[in-house]
Length: 139
Image 1 (cartoon, rainbow, N blue to C red):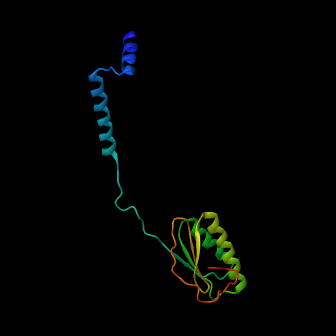
Image 2: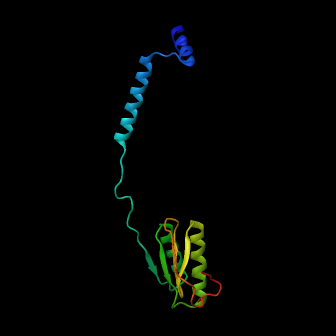
Image 3: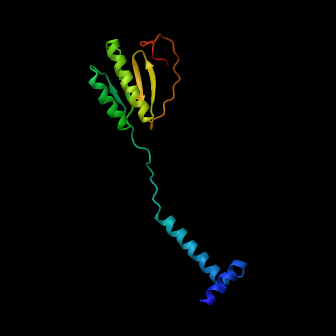
């Protein structure tokens, strides 16, 4: 026990056996080799992305759109042929779901919206040239 205490004191001061240093270095190289050997790298890390296109006919379809977003699928919603009041309710409901999931909304055209979950980035170069179908919806 006193030998270990003396070794610790000498080690603290900087006087260690060279044999111990070599052994520690060899052990650390072995552990690095084992860590590299066990690493698995996926070549195909990006999976295919499925985009859902929806044309809701009733407010009940809004929940189905939100379910797609919860499953991390972007949804293009076509509201061109839907009554204005129903379209407003669908956009409000799905926009709330997108907000809760940390996603994004992008108006693509007159009455067409892209709702994307947080795993999808939207980059837009569209200019606002027409008057919006929904005056309360900007951009």
